[in-house]
Amino acid sequence: MSKYQSINPYTGETFASFDNPTSQRIEETLALAHALYKKWRHEEPAVRAEQLQKIADSLREHKEEIATLMTKEMGKLIGEAREEVDICAEICDYYAQNGAKLLEPTPLKTDLGKAYYLKQATGVVLACEPWNFPLYQVIRVFAPNYVVGNPIILKHAHNVPSSAALIQKLIHRAGAPEGALLNLYLSYDQIDQVIADPRVQGVALTGSERGGVSVAEAAGKNLKKSTMELGGNDAFIVLDDADSDQLKQVLSDARTYNDGQVCTSSKRIIVTEDKYDEVLTDLKEIFSQLKPGDPLDEQTTIAPMNSQRAADKLQKQVDSAIAAGAKVAYKFPGKGQGAFFAPIILTDIDQNNPIFDQELFGPVAEIYKVKDEDEAIELANNSSYGLGSSVISSNIKRAQAVAAQIETGMTVINGRWITAGELPFGGVKKSGYGRELSELGIMAFVNEHLVIDVSK
Ligand code: NAP
Image 1 (cartoon, helix red, strand yellow):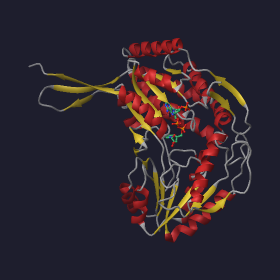
Image 2: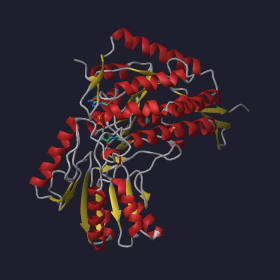
Image 3: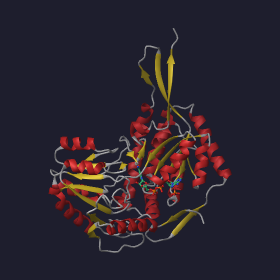
Image 4: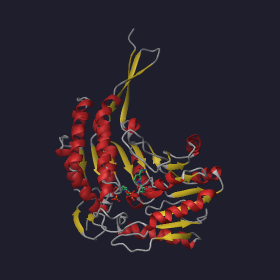
């Protein structure tokens, strides 16, 4: 049976399944994408930028269709699915409006002649993407590379194959030439073959460390450029001067948005002792008001997880944490349908606890009590990961100073994770390397081609 299946995690219904491609199909796909790269080399980025604006418009036009499918396929709340489509349309807007400018040649000062570097396409890029934001993860790679002129071969997660097919269809229908984004339901072995193909010049992966290690190894072996957007165990630092109203507002979905299945979700809530009881009380209240149910129902505020397998894995991690001494400060009493996981708050997690340095990808809040700011920073940095983080304080200068000391790729002051076309996204340590989005992300698979005129 094919691994690529659309299974509604709320109802358990399997509503589509797809086979791995044949060798011939892979060859045809590579040939099509490569031919488009060659054609695009003769076209200005401004032409593609105009087309990208049409893709943004099409995403807005088909918002309900995309959002409903994402909700059915991986269980996210319908309101959050609509928000995801809006963000993706805005990312396309950003590159449609700024992409061509960002790709203009950069002059260089030198005594050796008149020098500048071009920013040119390099070729086909393979994008291996996760299920947690089925559209957003793809658009983060597709939109900048579309303006650059790098066609994308999409290998989406095995549990969102219908979303992958719809994304390809909508992009093509919006006027993108055939080959701009081609979806293949690749096996892991086929991924390695595609990476090894000389027509493929880069690979972008967003996902877990497991997937990252395997794909980065294949890219390294073949000397292909890669970007790795991996997991996180983000610190959410609450300083003693945090404003109570702001704190509560930020906490409201910091750990439950997308059912906690966000790489930059606030997984470790690190609180100075003065604020500890307040945070615990606030979080208990927030969690107790959650309403499980059908994610297509607007009244539901806590979705099922993306699959029963994910819920079972999370339960094992929580059980191991409790067995090692973690305390359950709160557990949601209700039972939800399907792959529902009851939100839970854990405290008293010491450094020997198996989950101390693990990512818990679901609605589990881990709360840590610390003496002061220094201890908070030390604990935040005591992690293999370094993706996002938050600092909550009413003194912005102080919060900025704390932010600068956290070994992480992103810090939000007085807010939870955030994303936009103009803001870079990415991490350090085992959270990966490279950046997506913004003026940095567009350069990921660009050839910075030096041209220098030394004629006398
Ligand atoms: P995953 O298992 O690594 O999957 C991500 C992608 O990689 C999928 O397309 C998957 O295909 C593929 N993959 C997995 N193992 C592979 C292997 N050994 N060889 C080749 N390809 C492989 O990740 P996930 O569990 O679906 O996603 C959740 C993780 O993604 C979390 O750790 C989260 O923090 C991280 N994430 C990071 C970011 C970021 O920007 N840093 C954003 C979102 C999520 P299959 O589905 O076919 O296995």
